[in-house]
Length: 249
Image (tube, rainbow, N blue to C red):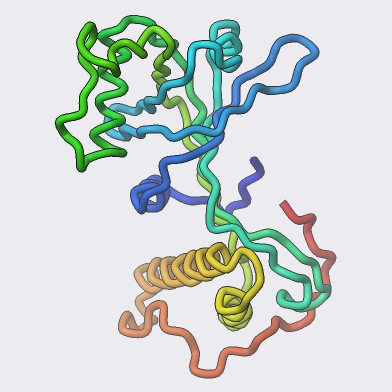
């Protein structure tokens, strides 16, 4: 994933974004010679303090064979996406996509023992199903335990995290506020993807406020009380650019 300097998210930012309830992603492992990658959509449990991610799969899942052959995997979590038409963004009218995506590059371990699989399942149950604390997996006891042979756990040790928040952060404030208005119109309309347009608008404004606050902190000439405050009459489009646009990424 290409991450330009103005799109990069730091650890505090991606942690807060995931903590809002984003625990479903796309896990990718390397396929065999001449094959494409093996992809599995899956819920997961992130333990950021331990630097690990836990999940489970059915024993016949082809991703497990791929992991045994090559344990290097990537888990991608993507949300807050929206298409931004070119006429929203000013001259020369290049459209783009807005999105947030966090990629975990990991080393995967297949968990085989009943006790270790039960531990993973119980941690997942505590996270995803907290309203039933009495439901737990005990090896050798009960219906859930009888399903353990058909499951495999996966423990992913996180080696690197790369986070991208792509919301035209390089554009001036007036242009961003104009785009935010367009996103709000789409979010309030009848078309598809209204929730995603609302999420993209929220991220765009949050990123702008964060960038403004950091700039205010660094500059003694800026009034801190105005940090992140939109101008009263923000124009809807940017001024024409004289340089060629970068390719959308």
